[in-house]
Length: 252
Ligand code: DGL
Image (tube, rainbow, N blue to C red; front, top):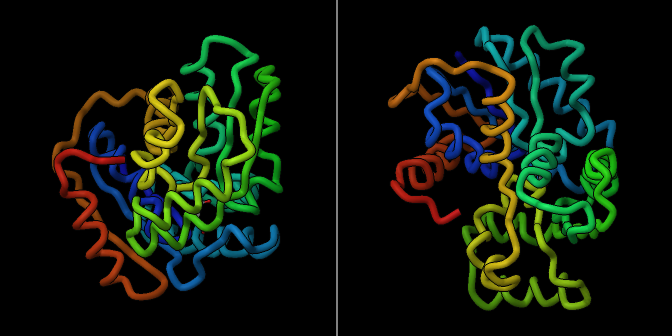
């Protein structure tokens, strides 16, 4: 299968990392809308417009599947994308919620959703979690984490200060949904902050778990073909992809 992976920027590479580890696809076409990142502060109509332009772009590749790695797009534009796409389109929000449900024993567990302002305002995570009868949901828009990750600042004083700023009045959660592609990169720091008993839910692993339920993957692809596209400075995206994706063990 040939898959297109779409994100607003470099963060979707965390999803590509999971796809590579599970060797699901023969070919991966990545598109990061680096000229217009961040999406998480934009309004619904703008996000839908960008998403539809991306579907048109992907039509050049005869894809079997599009994965929307971006949570913000998954929250707002999936049905519009599906209307004009020639292949199925899957997003990470539903997958993340299914993975959370698999990881937790009881419906009263305290779930913290971290995401961009747009994703939190959409209530997409609340709706999916409530449809599975979860009752104890906290949400927090943590947009500051996006530029930190874009700057490759994954831990240290600035990250600690941002945690203190966002989390000081919260109850310790049983699970944290990393509801933004960029957040897995600061997951070691988050795990340290919340402690080992808090489960972190990663969109990339969640979408793999989800797709493995929907499709039968009979072959494993050790060396998939990969192409990377960006709306601005594709060389910078390729350099980051090389750095993050060729590391044997991931820290996120
Ligand atoms: N990729 C976006 C997401 O997963 C985060 C970055 C942005 O604001 O564009 O929600």
